Length: 109
Image 1 (cartoon, helix red, strand yellow):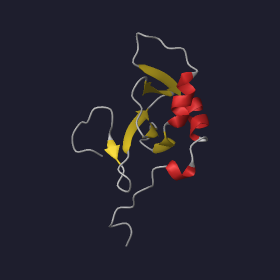
Image 2 (cartoon, one colour):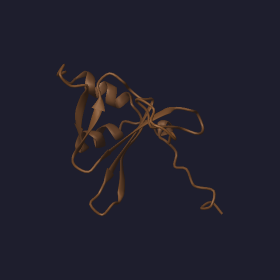
Image 3 (cartoon, one colour):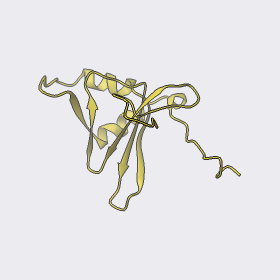
Image 4 (cartoon, one colour):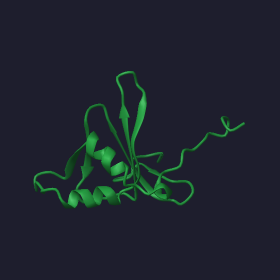
């Protein structure tokens, strides 16, 4: 994670310095930017009990392909994407493009 707010991105990967946008939802959907596409996207659901569930992890090309088919509302700078669509798009992510889980040093011992 960046130490301060950086427009359009939330983190950078350690291994290959790719920019990551992190989206969270407490409900059924996320807002995905219309014109700014990060290299990688991580979508997390936060349950009522505070558990994190990974909904999407990887390259954004499945999102970009999907929104090309969506009608644009020029009044909005984002698309609303439901969890069902996110799941379908996550299944299209190439395994090698997924963000690797980082194990803190104290847990690896």
